[in-house]
Image 1 (cartoon, rainbow, N blue to C red):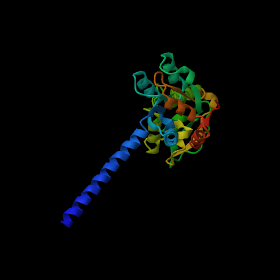
Image 2: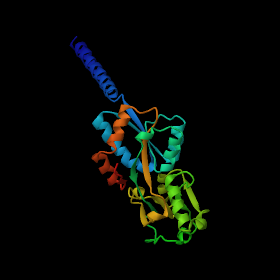
Image 3: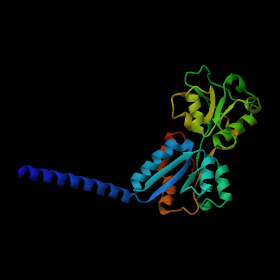
Image 4: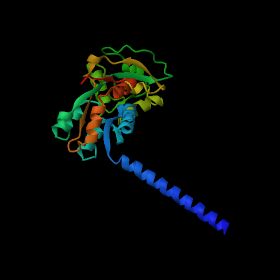
Length: 266
């Protein structure tokens, strides 16, 4: 009898623990039932992920990020992807959505700026490069290809091509370009040694020890690198508006600067 009693008591205890566990999970889920979805340029991955985690913990709001090239994200938003906020790595794709009345124009502001750099694998024999008019990039590539974001769509690639065109170098290497889907993919090719030279943002080069920066492109060789941010029209929830304000807070600014971005005054 005692053994049956103890067994029933034990089973009842297990039942209570399971019910408490389920209730706790439901309570946590319910406490963060409100959430925001942020579509952000691939180059902001580390910074926005960290900022989003901080925001979620402080405001008790779920945070769902989606990172890709600005062009890919803009097209997804145009096709009704459920985004609340869009952070682009250039003005072009934000302008694209604004002209179609897909973003909330009054909410738009320039959040960050960046630089583009020339990188090589960490063990490369290539040393510091003096980037100037008609510098011999083709010779640096040898039999390899220049890794960069697709210059027809990806902002980092667009800036890179603009700079090389202005420097009189593009025509000599345009057939030797490995076009990547976004800047992080371009970085990865150089990290793996699959490309001897690449063009990425300074912030991307800073997150890995597998590449070295051998030159920074002259600022006047390309348009200013700006990261505009805006609410997506029709998705301006109170939580999304709170995140837009949070992006201007000192805590967010410190994280962006930690990853090498310049935070613009608003």
